Image (cartoon, rainbow, N blue to C red; front, side, top):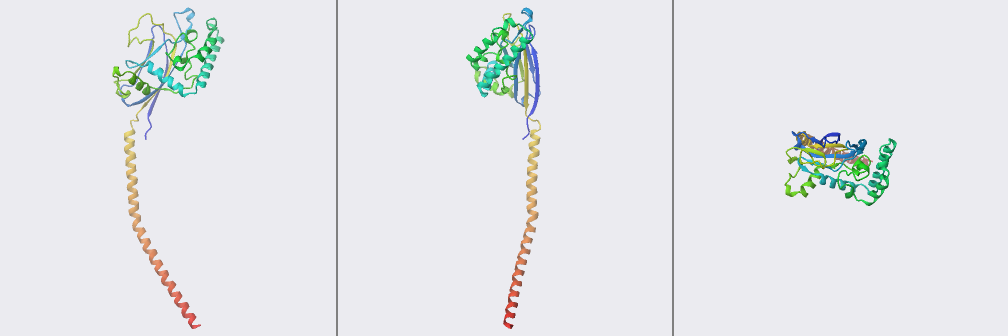
Length: 293
């Protein structure tokens, strides 16, 4: 039947001391028609303005909220399952390719080479001794390579081929894991749909203090919203009417041709009867000729 309607959004957000969260609000008028939201997130380094020379530093523990519910753990668990779909050898090899590309880039531009001298050695051990759950214990950790720039979330989608995250699946996972919160069962039951992507706890949803890591890094996001097609009921009605019309045409065709069929059969019967009479007459003539001869 009618295909879903899709809307695609993408953007990037640079975290800083005063810019700690990106808020994405979907159209409140049609959010109940949402079927799913498929999204992709990956990070890049940013300038950490509190450090010497404004060194490039990655995100530290991104938190993700749907409305006021923190769904970070559910998103990370879903990402782990999506990684399992990809052959493990591919995941680890693409991760390695991405890290080597990144470190080569920093070498080429002379960016903090002395601070990263042990990054590749560290990475090989880290890659071979950790599981997907270890890689995605958090969305961004500054202990993974210098400044956290070797964290797997820097290489998802750009290098590691993984499917987009289904918000519907994430929400089902969250609902199952948090029955005490009594969350709505489906996305359509939410009063509105607001995604908050925060560097650490969200200042608009939770209470933060000065001990939180200073924000840095760039978060790239791409998401595709699938809606029920508003024309689908009308198209279903049209399809139903066309089917009924075709059935009516078939009935009329049969009714129209039936008399012709009956008349044709009568004509054939008359022809067959006449043929039999002619054959008998010819046989009689032959017999008479034979007698005369």
